[in-house]
Image (cartoon, rainbow, N blue to C red):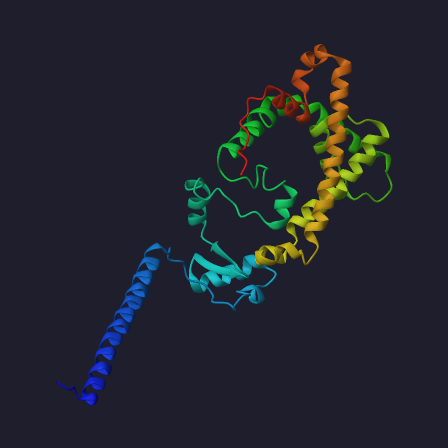
Length: 312
């Protein structure tokens, strides 16, 4: 029996449209259900953030912050409450202005909030965040804290180093007394004495004479540079994606400061090791109670009983 060509064409078109419409419908429903599921799961996993100023795209609230940050945040807390979020470039910061909440974060929940975001310059100045300030809470940090508290900063050790501190203070008083009748910057003298005390407690009498004075003077200068670079606002901290550019050259300057410290510390350590070889073990035993920090660290290194940080 012959078929009507018109009916065959209409049937083919109808069947094709019916099949394709079903496919499109199934595909559209699948996409819609996937989007709904993703939105629900994203909302469940996302931690709700406190309120805060919206800021500008990419820049956040950086253009609106005054130099007096404490006053600026105090004014914002009157609007958004004691806990608020502030976007500084690409970084999200949580600002706490309530003493009770700050006590809970810094004291009651200190283990939870122990880790710190290492700034770009701090990362370079602490050999990749390995010091006690920037290290994440864990075995490595606990080892550093144990060495500092038990070996270096305990009462017995500080009492043993009293003679070093007294020597530097007496040297300062002698200098001030020799300048009777002239203008004396007491604050500057106190700052210089503080650095001399630090150097004495670090490596004691390893450096002597002109070498000691020269290294102490440079030590003060480079320590001031080190602290100044840490406090310098750095674009790399707000925009980590362009940190490798080092737009302000802060990282390059910090590397030079760290290289100077490395050179001085290596020189002092070499001199101390040579002195110990010449003086012998007996003197080290008799002088054990008046060891400076360098001697303590060398002894801890020789004992080898402190756990090392696992390599990443």
